[in-house]
Amino acid sequence: MHQEKITILFVISADKTNQKGLCPLNCRITLNKERKQFSTGLFVNSNYWENKLQKVSVQDPNHKFINTQIEQIQIKINNIALVFQLQGGDCTLDNIYNKYLGKELKKSEFVLSYYKQYLCKIKKLVGLEIKDNAYKKFVYVGNHLEAFLKWKFKKTDYPLEELTLQFLHDFDYYLKTEKKQGQITINKTIQRLRTPIKQAISEGYLDRDPFILHKSKTVRKTVIFLTTEELKILEEAVLQQKRLCIIQDLFIFCCYTGLAYSEMANLEKQNIQIGFDVMNWIQMKREKTQRQISIPILPKAQEIIEKYSIDSNRIFPPKK
Image (cartoon, rainbow, N blue to C red; front, top):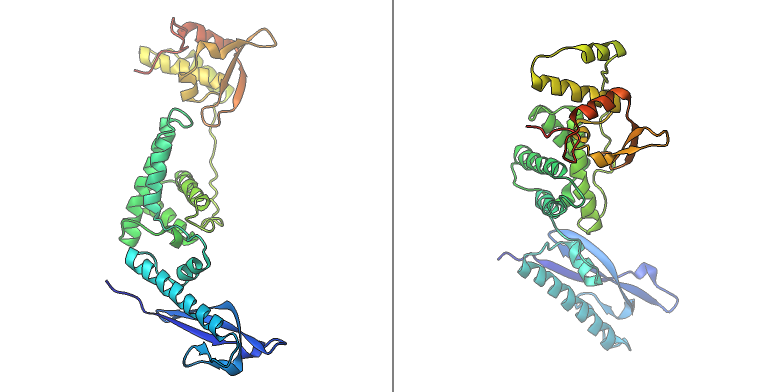
């Protein structure tokens, strides 16, 4: 096992001598040509400091105490570095120093590994807090992330602490050029990727959000809607196939209620309630936002409900 060489040197700051003629003693750690210097909290008389021996001479009245403290600091730092090396930890100056101070070290994790752990957590929430369809979308993002890491870095994973805003820019480019995704889809993909990253911050794997400056690219989407005349033509159209007739009715129902297809398909009799105007209203929660909505049932929509309302609790027949 290769062990990194660590050098510990004690130096005095003679230019910071106090009124008692004592100057602070600093400890300087060198590892892989990198240095870190910090105060030991000890003060010595520069006249009694023996730099080559790295201790104060016996002429100093406190030489036993000071030299013992210096020795203890050396032992502690060397032991910390040794444990890092034996356990295969990240033996860096910052980690050694933080461990010396008694600080909890930042956890080390990788982006794909952490994302998969996040998937395992939310999978247990399917049917409780999230829908299965929402979970599957997070799974797709994980698949794209895994493929992107191989494409961009030729790696199976990437350190969380090395994430930068450029990582997102490259991911955006990959999804656009390699996966042929539209910008709206890309924005959603990145939004889902950022969710576990924010959780990683709260769990101590990251000090800050590496994507905090990210701004979703604006997409101007043209909304196409039917005119009154076009809707009337659709209503009066006579279709021969029963399947198309059902589709025609359901589409018209969505036009008159503003419900999304999934909301219309899951509509139940308990969602139909008498309103303040003694007319039928739809009372339900939005599929995506879970916000409570109230929709008046216009005559045409009521006509379609009466046409398809069956003995079961569902208003419309299940999709075959």
